[in-house]
Length: 268
Image (cartoon, rainbow, N blue to C red):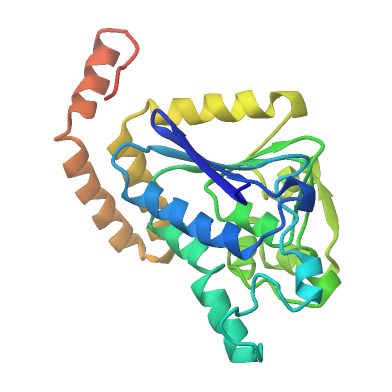
């Protein structure tokens, strides 16, 4: 059975982590398939929204600790039997770290559907998504300190942007486990929903985005992320260019007409 599943339904794609007996801990196969799936999403003209979720009892427990103990962790190099520091660094760069870099290239909404546990790199993979919809019984933790490693996948980049530097350091230094409600209060997750509603809520949210004005949503995502490293002047210059393009498209005309005619817009 594949360690990762990828399927599409209309304009919505879903990546499902599929090692339920190992709490969806990463394997090399999973990471490589994840990279391949993200490339498909990035390059597709059909896919408008991506959902990332886990099969079984949890979202993802992070790295496979048993494999790490045997010298076969997801950041080990299969090409270098000596497992030198440089080999491990290069393995991270070529495998795990390709995921956040690819996500940065995807201008479509990416939603993490989280349940059970999201620990270590599993939590960080959710943080890389645009929206995090979490079941209320979920537990979340930056658990790296428990095994004496650092967040090699980008957690140190994403976490402080969401919760602030002091809260990020506290989570990383202590490995404390948060409830979904506590995570929501810190700004770590977007929505907390009853466990039994998680699937339906996520699908309904994804459908709403998939049925929206596609180019507008893409430009909004680009503007929000790119403005994080822009001056005000540069951000305003960018968004005025986007506005010029958007108002030439059929979805703009449909949006205006629907409001004037007092009906629901039907975007293509």
